[in-house]
Amino acid sequence: MRELWLKPGKERSLARRHPWIYATAVARVGGAPGPGDLVGVHGADGRWLAWAAYAPDSAIRARCWSFDEADRIDRDWLAARTREAVGRRDRLAQVSDAVRLVYGEADRLPGLIVDRYADQLVLQLQAPGVQLQSEVLLDALCEASGCRNAFERSDSALRARESLPAAPGPARAEARGVLRGREPPERIQVREHGLAYWVDVRRGHKTGFYIDQRDNRQLARELARELASTLGRAPRALNAFCYTGSFSVAMARGGAGDSLAVDSSADALALGRANVELNGLDAEQVQWRCADVFEQLRALRDAGERFDLIVVDPPKFAASHHHVERAARAYKDINLNALKLLQPGGILMTFSCSGAIDVDLFQKIVAGAVIDAGVECTMRTRLGPGADHPMLMTHPEGEYLKGLLLQRL
Ligand code: SAH
Image (cartoon, rainbow, N blue to C red; front, side, top):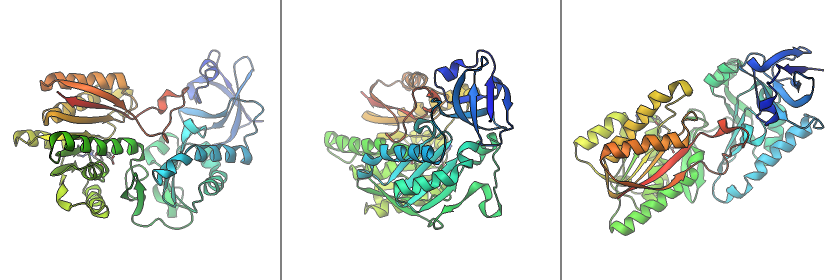
């Protein structure tokens, strides 16, 4: 029997059903478990606490599968968890065929991310437990989703932290490769709220698309429509850090015109242009600019440009708690400069996907930017990810995307 005993007092977080066991909490390990092997976890007093997957080289030394001693963590158990996760997303199929089917800890499959793009699954295997069980999980995923194609896009930085091999074999350099079915095509077309988008699952960011912004894209489209009706003209939209331009497409469909989309990635912008065409929109509705957003916002202000609807959705500025201060300055800077470009009555949707910056801190940072910009704004609502990116209540680390919807008075 493979077992893990915690140091005295270290059972507290497990008693609160937090699913991670840090290396510093482990007193000893019995039965010589290998990477991903099932271990029974015990408190210092010997009491059974959880079933977990062992990760010998990671700071997160084990991730819990279950807190019920009666569970058998076998093929049937893993298949059942997978079916449940996929089933919880059934309702979303009416809205989109780009859906996160499994979101790690929140679906009680710690370390496993599965995104669906039409008939293609894209997996991130971020811990040895799900790596070891990947064949069982793939069988269950393909069965539950009806997809026959699965591709791996495991994040190499994350895998290095878990001491998983970056290159499992020559054919799967950087842990990218076909797990099931065919090689993914150059571009996969997905639909979302009646719009279509191209996704590059092999080279795009994350697994190819920002699925988590689905509801906010739809909201941006509605806001463009709202502004068009109050202004009596096409609102002018700015999409800063636009990636493949999904917000721009949604806002253009809502009636935005003479809009601008900015990103530093030329590849992403090329897909953005293709997305405008794919939706039969007028190419003139969105102008694409390959530039640094920090510089571009200042250049736009100097040129006297103004916008009615602005989306600011930067990459993760704070990789960890060590970077919070620097990240806060960066969020302040872009929001300050975006607010200076906002017309009276205009709307700003601003986001942070830094887990280390919680929503209260983000709101404080943006409030500071509002004051320094010398404008008055109301906050209409807070924003978050779609329903396929839930957070396990006992694992607040899973919360990352937050946004604010501001309107200038
Ligand atoms: N809003 C997008 C996702 C944005 S991801 C969507 O919903 O699809 C962040 C983007 O910021 C990436 O496309 C990245 O290329 C871009 N980026 C990162 N740093 C940048 C910078 N300094 N200037 C411009 N773009 C940047």
